[in-house]
Length: 402
Image 1: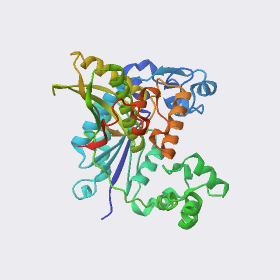
Image 2: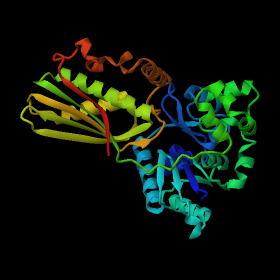
Image 3: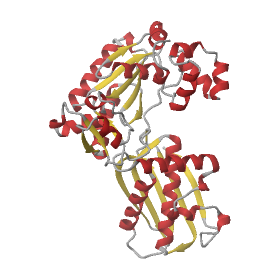
Image 4: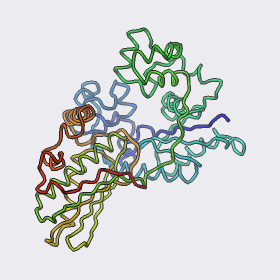
């Protein structure tokens, strides 16, 4: 059976949220981001007209569009609006995958027997805009790749339907940049070989692409030919990522506990980034020497950044620890996980901070987690380093739980 896969994307999501709060921002070039040394998290179509793009340094954006207004992002607002949209979609669609804070995939295969798939999706998009005030684009096709590409082509506020027999004619004239997995390096490599549009890419033998770009070559060839069997994965916001540390000898050394917490958070945050998760709730647990256990949690804006999560964890610990008793166990849990690519808090951090995270993760990916760590978290270095006062203390690796 031919699948019916919908991709829904909230148009200029951060900008749209900001304009809901302040209608005076409507119709003007608008940039959502940090300070002068930060980057563009989102920009309005009025700003894009001048060449401004997401992830561009703010100073470069202001050179292109000096009349643009820059506002700071409000991740609490964005998280709440994203949750509103998610609830509406989940209440109506049979199978939903939340791909990021502003992107969704829906599998509505078989619905055409009872109700036109396009008509149903169009009515859902109107309901979302009516109830939340947020504009949303969608595309309906046979798989996730084609639907996502089509959504981009239909923006803003455009809705496309690409049936099976029109998939290749639709894809062929488009730039290979339109394929989600094609980054700058791959684009430049293929462009030098004269492969600039999807038609040329689809005609290139899969073996050639594999020899050029490795194991992803076959996957790229499939996408260029409109082939994508990946399923719509059910929304998994209740999934958690957690770790615990049990001291063999109970401790009252607060500095040691703080260092442990920093290391645990750093390791969990790295795991979250590697797996493509964003965190919206952080919980901390401490167990005293008498086995009394206490917990604290805090809802936060979606992030996977060490420094944001670590700050939150330490604040929760100091709020929780007020009995001056020895501690037996410390636990950290991330919940409210959603798929996302915003690895950096683009509203607070600079280009340098973004580059630091990217570099640290590359080093860890190549040489292992312990190759580079923050000073405060070095308590989690290997046992051979003998940093912990009791080298037999147990450390439980991060685990996934439902």
